Image 1 (spheres, rainbow, N blue to C red):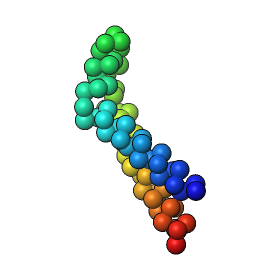
Image 2: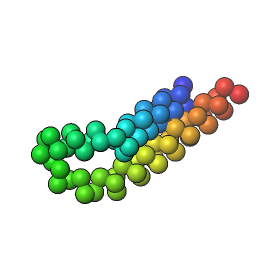
Image 3: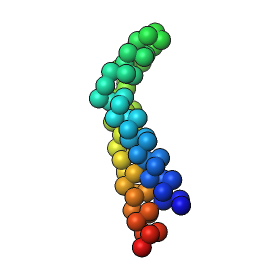
Image 4: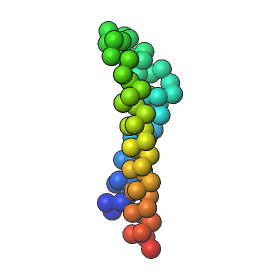
Length: 69
């Protein structure tokens, strides 16, 4: 069961990071809130976050496959 939870968390985090990276949702929302000065460092956070969630999803998938076997 734990591998399944890790896998789901990885997938949800990956989808969220992809939406924030490849669409301007985060940029528009920060601009609307008046926080556009913080957008200079956003690439330093979102790209490693995306890679982390992809790795988490792969790890969860591997754990889930081992539990089924």
